[in-house]
Structures are given as C-alpha cells and as structure tokens.
Length: 350
Image (cartoon, rainbow, N blue to C red; front, side, top):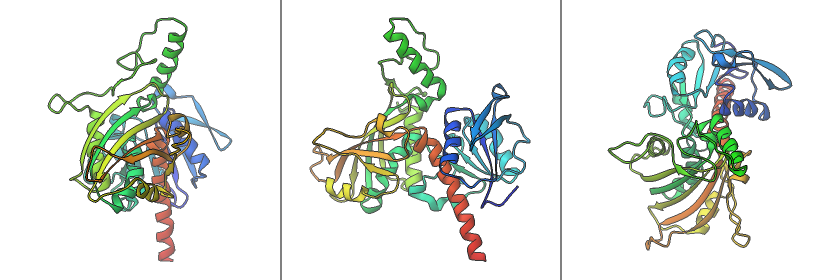
C-alpha cells in the first residue's frame, strides 16, 4: 500500500456522479484523515475539477494504472466498472469499498452496514460491499429490535427517490416537473414512464418466475446476509416516487415474542444512526424533506399491527437520504472503520 492506513491515500471511482460527489463531501465534512485524494471517472469527465478542502482537484480518467499508491478505493461507478477495476485496485494493494451490486452476494465479500455488522469488515479479502440503499435504510432501525427480539417476518413497501437512478434521473424529475407546470410536453429519456406528478413500479427488470423486480430481490437477499439470518421471511414492493433524494419505507415486522410500541421506541432511542420522529399530536412523522441532507434514518408511525392478534407485530414508517446513509455516508463510515481498526491494531502491537 502507498501509505499507512492511519492516513490513507484514497481514490473515488465515479467521482463526478451523484454518489461520488456526496462521497467527496462526506470525506470533507467528516474530516477523514487522508493523505492524498485521487478523483477518477470516465473520459467524458476529463478536464473537470471538484473542490475539496479549499482546493480544486482534477478529475482523472480511470484506467488500469489509476490505483498505484492507493490504500482505499471508494467505488461508485456501476457494476461493470466495479467488476473490471475493483480486482485491479486490489492487486495494487488497495482495499475497495464498492457501492455497486457486483460483489454483494459473493460469499467471500463482507456486506456491511457499520451500525449492524461492523465486525464483518475484518473478514475482507480486498473488497467490502456497500449494500442496496433501500436495504440500508430499512435495516438500520430494524437492527436494535432484531437483536433484542428476533424479527421473523418483514413486509416492506418502498417510496424511492430519483437519486437512486442517478443524477440524470434527478434532472429528469426537475425538468419534467417544470414542463408539466408550464403546460409543455416533455419526453422522458432516463426512466420508462413520465415522472412529474406520477409514481410507478421500480424501473428494474422483473423476474417472470417470481414476479419480483431486481430491486426487490436485492433487498430480500441482502437483508438476510446483513442480518446473518437466512430464515427471515421478507416481502417487498418497490415504487419510484417523484422525490429528489430521500427514500421512505413503510414496514411491518413480526417478532418471535410479543412486542409493544413503547418497547420499540425504547430500543430505538439513542440507537446509532436512528432518530425518532413520532409526533402524534402534530401528525408529524418521517418525511423525505426532513431526511435529506443528514445521515440518520428517521423513524415514526410506530404502532401495533392490529391485524396480528398475537401482539408480535409492529408497523412503522422510516425515511433516509438515499445519497448519504443509503450510499455515500455508509461507504465513508466503512472506510473510517478500516482506519480505526488499523490504528487500534498498531496500538496493541506497540
């Protein structure tokens, strides 16, 4: 590796994309202890610069020689790019934190949400996978409950923002909304259906055998891996909604033992990465407008599931910033844990 992991040389792959830009901001705002930063992207971004800690950094074209001297490579450029370049980065001595789905279900690759399974980081063989955004936002508030009273069944309905489909989808939402309000026609190019004042089933391929789309299948499989529980029953419907960057999720979960709303609130109070927003008197609960731009998952509408006479089921509503906790922030938190583990190991050796 180029430098010690206590002050690593870092590369961002896909630095000009929606998530890449947020990774850059997270590194800056969280004062990540890096010694050098390299911004990598496709040839169409060549010549661009991005600001970091008061300096304009050039965007370099990603190639096979981009990872010389790099200790940590934060990837957010799509599955095909990750499959090609992540092994090259590892061969150069870097640890890869990958935001695509390329390696998530590889049994040799840890799939990590630091608030849940930070210990898995130590099992990496060069690549650590960042989970699906909807899975992260669902599981961060579910984990404190699951750890105390095992969740046996989980039913999710997602309301997913444009940011999950990238910067181009966010721009399409803005442009199509402006056109709609001006009485103009707009031809959608990024998403399969008109986006302004509309919602539709998540724009991933549907498996004809199961009826589930790729996004839904990802959440089911990844949730089981993250929780370390292959037996948990999960059902999910993923919907794209006309919101710019924060996902919301309606969830109902069934536990092994009876559980009450007050118990859930007590378990979530002070839980890392969770903020309770549950003001019944004002009818004020998690909303994308409050979730965006900050790193916590907001949780509210905590109530007993009246359809379950056993008293083992709870329904609640959550919202989280897809670009932050659902992607960039989670990746940077993993990188922070890598640095912390390295520093702690050196102290023990000393």
